[in-house]
Image (tube, rainbow, N blue to C red; front, side, top):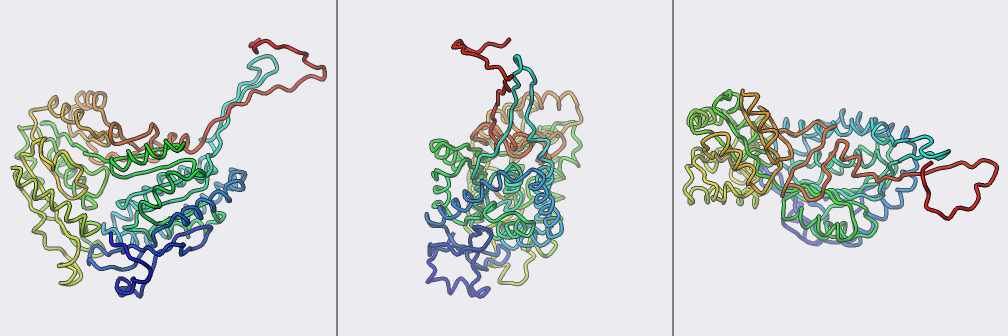
Length: 518
């Protein structure tokens, strides 16, 4: 990321006349009080297209103050009115999701169809939130004791913060904010500074849907904004998605400041292919899950565990399929786009270099890709890396141990089910996993034994539907609450239990003993 001051933005702004993505606070764009800016790139050309403001401490305070001021009225707004706004937002999102997908592609680089899929999956959580009335119901016990009724209620937390990553600038925030808003909270969203415009587009949709000013705010920035939200006394909770080291930092810092935290970390997702699997299906799945969105998915398959007896045939099928893929500008009908930034592309390329030097067999070299781009300059300067396939990878190689977050698929050969299960369960991550088999008994055994939060059986990217929770185990999650589903509703509300008695006209009298049920 390139950071500049406001007085030195002229060169960076030449690409589009100096457009700057501003904060969104209290229902309007806000320039903020700081002078720092970061460049925003079109990954398919390598050119700066705009800049984004980076929050100062004062900007953090302003965004939180706006959310805090809006909370009492939104908390007291009826469920009927809240869901009316949710339904309107859902309608506007559905009508304009094509525009949002194009914004995502222009800043992230993923192909438009993939960006549209991202928005549609996020929309599922909006639809879940539209029916939050039933999920917020409490319980009631009449006459629990003589003439005493006991009941439970769920109430919103207050100001909640969301810190989201670059790889899903629409879907990941939508894992959280629809439920938070429907439950009566107010939101401060801190999106990635690499692709910030989607958040502002969503903020405008909320305003058009009739959401009161201050209920949904967007704070752009870097570590200053993150630390400000983690330590601010008026922020009640933090929802985070990102790498494991940062997730751990977010969890430890947020909880030490008295906040409820759900911090979803990194992954090293395995796909185990047993000898009885449909290899054509498995090859399709490996390519789709390994190279979709250029591998920049927390649910991407990066470690393919192929049993020895079928490994050669499976790799041959994967090679055939990769040969048909077109890498290039996501707006040109390609299958895979560029990586999000130049430094990230270089980091992933460094892993390819390391895999070769450590002795893995490079079957497909994505460094040699010739992209389908708009012109020769884009070919030369876009952040390109094609699908890359390694075979005979050992578990001590960095391409196996590290989360690469790029289009690099590593084949690890295993003797069978037991060795594959041992590798998966010994890995420090536990986000997503898949098994490909036609043996129902093996699949059931796998489902029971694997120590991972999300499991696919003949499904390579097992992202749950919105009414189930999303989240991993081990170093893939800090905190005990997953995203969306019933767990999301629980995270964004807290319980009260009321014990109630309406007295008869006669006074009950004094009784200093401990209350007893009778």
